[in-house]
Image (cartoon, rainbow, N blue to C red; front, side, top):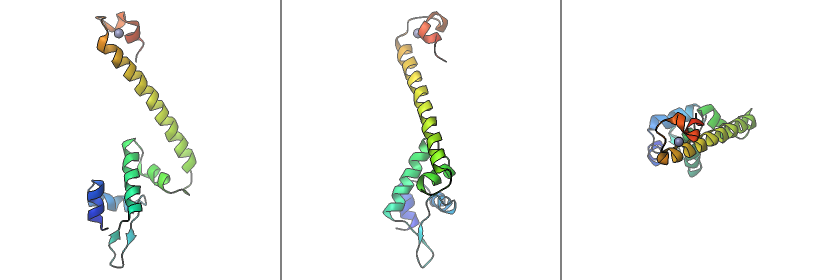
Length: 119
Ligand SMILES: [Zn+2]
């Protein structure tokens, strides 16, 4: 499919697809006319790209996710896993705090051991 259709399918402007193409993240095929051609494989790569952006990964990192043979890939993936696990732990603490605060009857944070323990 042409770039306009791919952009609509993914929900980004065409210039964003051209940028990701130029950066080597998701590189479209080229028709003999020179126009970019996106296949279902490209679309799935674009969906993965968007999802990885959503969890805070950079374009160079996402390029490594999508290209199995890039140098440093495994180390980067392990770092990202550690980062996500730390974030999950932070989110779980925040969730437990807010769930407590909803029903906390202390008038000051410092009078509540559970409120005082957060932060
Ligand atoms: Zn409390």
